[in-house]
Amino acid sequence: MTMSHAGHHVFDDALSLENLGDGLYRGHTSKPYNNMVGPFGGVTAATLIRAVEMHPARLGDPVSLTVNFAGPVAEGAFEISARAVRTNRSNQHWYLELSQDGTVATTATAVFGTRRETWDSLESSPPSVPAPSDVESVDFPEFIAWANNYDMRFTAGALTETEAADSVATLWVRDSPPRPLDFTSLTSMSDIFYPRVFQRRGKYVAAGTISLTVHYFATADDLAAQSDDFILATAHARRFHKGYFDQTAELWSTTGTLLATGHQVVYYKD
Image (cartoon, rainbow, N blue to C red; front, side):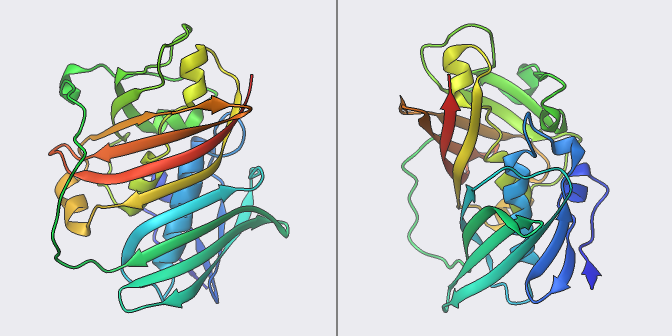
């Protein structure tokens, strides 16, 4: 059995996995990334990406990830099984399960692949916002522990106790202390937004992500160029209806490169 090489950053410690062989890994939840109930979903998603990255059969880098949070992840140890269900010339399809005491808490599918030079076009554009140095950091309540590991500077949608007319949130964000961006931290930041229903209602309500999808456009070179600088993240919902709402997000580099998009379905009770 071998261990992944955890870094000195608390994020790397949270993603530390023990390789049990045959695509099976053992990890442990991280108190610094606790949410109101269970662990921060972004770190759970990032840990699943880390499991594939550690697998000896892995081909290329992440292209897409879908995580279905089937049930709560309890504090303590968990196991991840990672299986490549098909490998093609340029992409590879994975199925993953996170379980505790024999009960599945999370399932996921991932696509990894290699990229090649092709025709390129960008139809979206980043929001026009002040520079991170011109925006103050926002503190979250202590019971949302994971937020203390990020430097978040909202230009729109900071949480208040007033109902909002829309669900748009835009912020500069990076790990705190700063950490060079990689695919795992990009995955986690795709879930950086507190539930959009909090913003619309101006209060905390029972809510939790049911399904999270991340589409990656960043290459290893894009991540190296970004280093530990701020990511510009923006998200909005389109409908709140009968206990569920959606969320669409974009994550941009400081130079205006679209690094990833995110899509969620969230349960809420109000």
